[in-house]
Image (cartoon, rainbow over all chains, first blue to last red; front, side, top):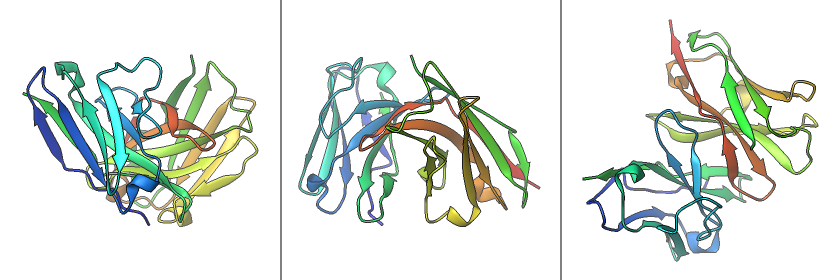
Amino acid sequence: SYVLTQPPSVSVAPGKTARIPCGGDNIGSKTVHWYQLKPGQAPVLVIHYDSDRPSGIPERFSGSNSGNTATLTISRVEAGDEADYYCHLWDTSSDHPVFGGGTKLTVL
Amino acid sequence: QLQLQESGPGLVKTSESLSLTCTVSGGSISSTSFSWGWLRLSPGQGLEWIGSVYYTGSTYYNPSLKSRVTMSVDTSKNQFSLKLNSVTAADTALYYCARRFTGSPFDYWGQGTLVTVSS
């Protein structure tokens, strides 16, 4: 089935920009979503349909998708953004959802 | 506001069955537009979709787990359930239930329940 590849970790200083890539074969032709996971909390959908923000998600969160990489960008990073982030899409060939391996964002 | 809450035993013995229930509040489970899914998060596998069920009882499962999984729905209680047979330590994970609108991502999730498989 379709494979999504994420780096295990990304570190960024407060106030800077974090970019979390999600690689896949011609992923730009697919629709990608992003989740934020924090311990003890329900996962939160932070970006859907490549680049749209669900209601209530700060404008600091943005997404892009082109070629073989989709990217979640978090601007002006805050301590509260520290979490695991997962990319996700629906694999039409296998007709089921696929997730990346997750990236732990550490705010230095 | 829609809320989902997982419930079930936190400890299951190896080779036995894992059974979890998800209770939906703030909305009806009986809608043709939504499917109700189970997912799990483990250190070794990351986030993994287990399967989904419609309120009609129609199901579809992850092929890698299909032989061990059964999902069902109880519309009178606004609940849906997961049963995973013949569990091993590899099934130890944080189990989530979630809602998905057809053609969309999972938009509402429960907080998750930790299930440990041990002999």
